[in-house]
Amino acid sequence: MKTVGERVAKRSVFNKHLSYEISIPEGKLKNTTQSGVGLDISSHGLGIETEYHLKEGSVLKCYLPLRETEATIPVFAQVIWVKPADGHFRAGFRFLS
Image 1 (cartoon, rainbow, N blue to C red):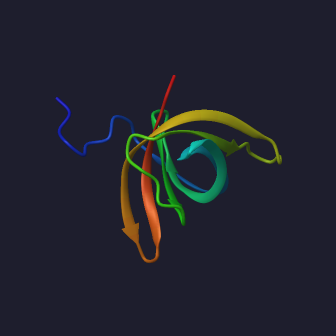
Image 2 (cartoon, rainbow, N blue to C red):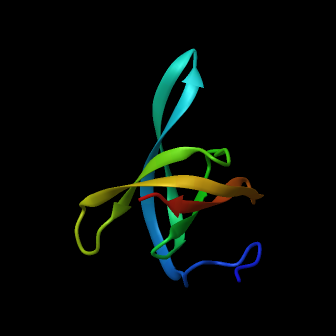
């Protein structure tokens, strides 16, 4: 049985720059594109460091870089947790299918 904080799948080091789109309420919903550095990745999620203060529960579209090319693949994810870290934020994303 999985306990609180236990990972569903083993993560691998990712260490790649990526961008993501998130909708923020400003009267109407406004899409904004932000960037960060992926820290680790698994088939279920991604750890990221970013300057943008994400909110838990938010759904966003990540653009994950593909190996040895400048192409990216769009993936929807939900922010599961966010923590301050040395003037930035670390966050955990769960991929949505």
